Each structure stands twice: as C-alpha cells, then as structure tokens.
Amino acid sequence: FKYGVNPEISSRIGIDLSITDHQLSLTVINNKVQNNEQRIKSGTGLTNAQKRLKLVYPAMHKLVLQDSNQNFNVKLTLQLA
Image (tube, rainbow, N blue to C red; front, side):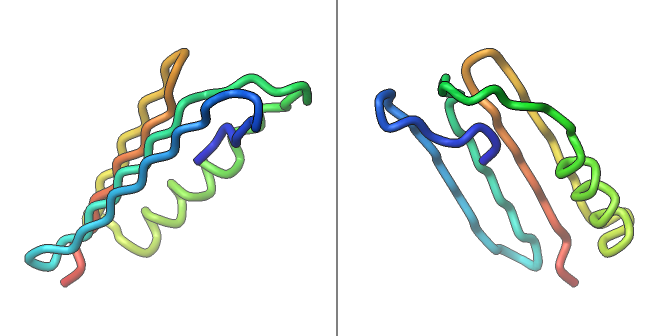
C-alpha cells in the first residue's frame, strides 16, 4: 500500500493473493487518506520494483498500476515456471 493510514479516517486496504497453474496473482488496493504530514512523492519505490521485475521475471510478469483521486490499485501477475 502506498498512502498509509489515518486513525481518524476509515482506511481500507485489500490484499488478494492466489497461485494457480504456475501463476501468482496479487492485487492490493487501498483508499487514499489525508494526514497532517506533508508527503514528498519520489516514485523511487515503484521505479525500483518495475526494474527488479524486468530483471528477475523478464517477459514473465505484468504490473498494472491504477492511481485515482480516491484509490491506489496494484495488480501483479507472475509466471512461476
């Protein structure tokens, strides 16, 4: 999850992980919450994750990121063998 939680606002984080027929599927979705800290967006974590996937799972992965005003959603599929 990317945007953390705030104890004063309902913070929903959903994680779904499954492995079927040599394929791993991971979906993580969280609603964005406001907090009092000013966040600096570097994008470094996502960039590093994408580079590592290309190195370790070349042509064997699919990463889809959806970023809206309310939610951040990640869908990752890996071919395992």
